[in-house]
Structure formats: structure tokens, C-alpha cells
Length: 235
Length: 75
Figure 1 (cartoon, one colour):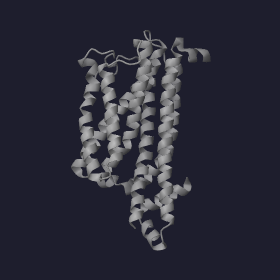
Figure 2: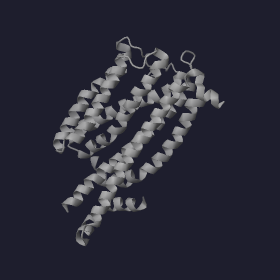
Figure 3: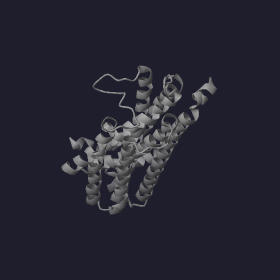
Figure 4: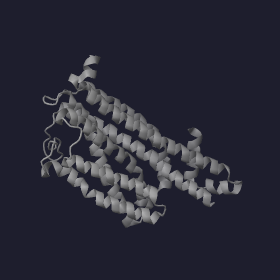
């Protein structure tokens, strides 16, 4: 199965896809921004401050999703001795890290009008900050170590340690008394959020997912060309 | 209408700064990634150009190398 995803086979697709993904991203983002800033209703309690949710929540979801994917890819790469899986994981990390920073900063901006403070050492905020540190360590490990075997091992250890934090982030609002409210959107049970707010939230999530796909494709192509550059040196 | 959207019942400064920060982060990440890509692509093209005919033909046997060169000329 892994042979189907060999870089030599998929480069034809990954090198042409970014322009189409960029077009789709701009389109979906435009619809999402219009819905989020103009058409979605204000909250009865938070008024218009609730609109920050449309950038804060998708950014947090995607940063968690990307970190989980990086962990699965790194562990699989280690088990199946597949270098391409590490390359995919490495290419996903920059957008995951930026989404994590966006979630922290927009959360801080949202905190001021709703809680009266820019920052609190609340369980969810602190665990998101810890996730950002794991992302930073993961990215730094790829910069520090030249030896491939070593970087594969160290980056996988970082993701295994970091993934412990992911369920903590998810359930922190249930396990501890925090400033955050419990989850409003549930996959298995009925969501408490109204459809007029859910719709723009899902559109913005789709736009953010397209953006991370775009960055992933560009980064993955860069990594492949880097490898081919080394190949030319060896000729 | 526009004033209403910008003012947002007094929360405009918070809402718009959150959206602007997000869009600026997107732009910065996109530009950094694009610059890195173009840099590697140009490095590849110049390295390929310095190969002798025999080596260039051998490198061209790999489909991915041909693809990189084709993309570089299209860009």
C-alpha cells in the first residue's frame, strides 16, 4: 500500500494541486468571513464578541488534529521504516504550530471582553500552551539534528510525549473548574450550538483545513526537491 | 451598515484584531513557505544546469526530476 504513496508517484499530483487548493481556500474563506462577520447572529450573553469563536475554535481544532496526525505518522514511520511518513509529518507541523499560536492569541483577545483578562492559568489555556511547546520542540528537532535516524527517533519521542496532552486539552473543561465552558459541539450527542452559528463555524473550519492542506503540499514539495537536490550532488 | 459591522456593539476592536491577526499569520506562513519552495526549486534548476550531458540525461530518467524542471519553467 505504501508503494502507492511513494514521492516519485505522487509528486505529479502534489506539485500541481497547490494552485487549485489556493483558489478553493480563497473562495471558502470569503464565504466564511462574510458569514462570520456579517450574517451570523450575535450571542445573547457575549454580544458580538462571540464572533472571535469563528477563528479561535477552528484554529484550536486543526492544531489538535494535526498534532494527532503527526504522532500517528511518526509512529507508523518508525514501525514500517517508511521515510515518506516522516516527511509528511514534518510537512504538516508548521501549519499545526501556526494554528496553535492563532488559537492562543485569539483566545487571549476573546478573554479580555468576556472574562476581563488577557490571560489566566486556566487548565485549557495552559495545556494549549504546552502543546505549542511540543510543536516548537518537534520543529526544532528537525533543525538541530542532521542524522536522519536520530531525528526520526527524537521527533517520534516528542510526539509520543506530546500526544498525552491532547486528551488533557479535550477533557480539561470537564475534569477541572476552568473559565472555559464545556464543549458545545458533540459528534455523538446533540450539539448545544444553534445552526445559525454552527454553519459559519463549519465553513471557517473547512477554510482553515484547506489552508493547512495548501501549506502541507507546498512544504512537502519543498522537502522532495531538497532530497532531489542532494541526489544531484551525488551524481 | 458598515459602521455597525465595524463597531460591533463596542467589541469591534477585539473581533477585528482577532481576525486580522489570523489573516496576517496565514499570509506570513504562506509567504515563508513559498519563498522556501522557490529557493529550493531555483537551486535544483541551477544544479541541473551545471551537469554535463551524460549526467543530465541520467538525472532526466527520473520522472520527478523532469516534473520539477517543467514546473520551474511554468512558474
